[in-house]
Image 1 (tube, rainbow, N blue to C red):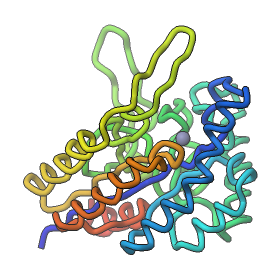
Image 2: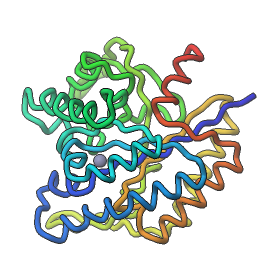
Image 3: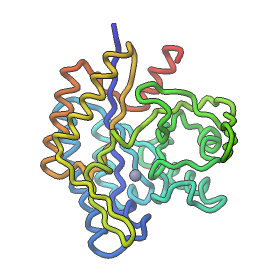
Length: 276
Ligand SMILES: [Zn+2]
């Protein structure tokens, strides 16, 4: 019997996503606030279809929105680590990365009763120390890398990367990597950002993107007997009406294709249990 799993993950960045980019004026702040408006809508949709999802929440957002965090927890969803601020580990100063990891994990433990099992780095960029720190602090998995589309794998440490010769791979660790992709993320498809030297156009037709996302699942079902595809959303992005309708159609389509929805913690355990 083939097993085709799907994970819906929601990075509840809210205001932290904009402050990390230095955008602190009232409009970007309000743009982040919309994430808290969207969370109850998303939770209602997930409950209607009996889908359990994974929510990655920066510590400063848990602090800002305790009520919404509690609603996520009560809905039976996984709460994973997403930094304290939304600054990617590679951009933090020496020592800050571990301090932020501990600070957010302590808050997650206070709120959920246990430390996070999974980590997803803000903006999906790890530092050279991240994998070692996640192992040191007892994480089961990371979900920030792109080395496969549907198959988890063990993360490496200590790669030596040269500019002009082959990369030397370091040893595999026991940390499970639950891979992601920008192509299965709502942010680059939909979010419009104008900065002095950059423009992210976003604002694509939701049904066109839906077709990419359902085809990705179809391809997996045709090419493997076991796979897990992870979709990434942001409440302030997917929470807009036309995208919420698309998200519902995605759940319906994947269900018709035989998907079983899991949290990434469940997915990591299922992969490890089958002997990888
Ligand atoms: Zn994020």
